[in-house]
Length: 217
Image (cartoon, rainbow, N blue to C red):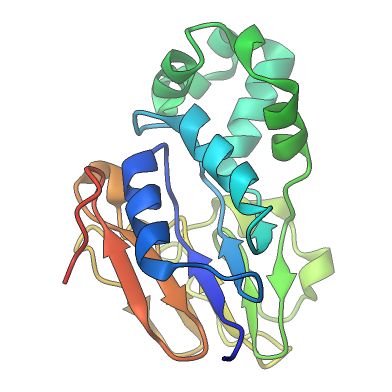
């Protein structure tokens, strides 16, 4: 059987959705799961999401990208939760999952957060959290584009590398993937009543689960 490259969109603490998706996908050792960032905030179990992703690394290949919500969490670790503005953007739910003490975040989770990648590329696709600038190499992309810029604010042209971009961050409140050909957005608004999406980037096969863990058929 072929190996699969499966991108998974913004989880935002929705562990039940992630668990259901993984049961449906059945990742094998040869498969690669590419997580697009925003593991934490807004949903009920950010701690559990990170535990699940760490466990997956023993089961298959895992690529974990950095999202803007991880940036905010790392900033809160430096400046304190109250001083960073993080709590009002979903950080309160993350704090609750760690027993309301930022000091309760395990060392393994801190290492995970600090080791997240800015982008990932295969022969045919590249993966970033938010957006990109078309005529700048992936290694030289500014943080504001990769982590913060929504597609509706600046829809990019095809990247100079000729590959298809797989992104999250711009919430598709319809629950449907936004496929523009050269860029595909799979943040389908799980925490807000939509779905968590997994996409096999080679076949176009899609799996979706809601925040209660119900699969979409």
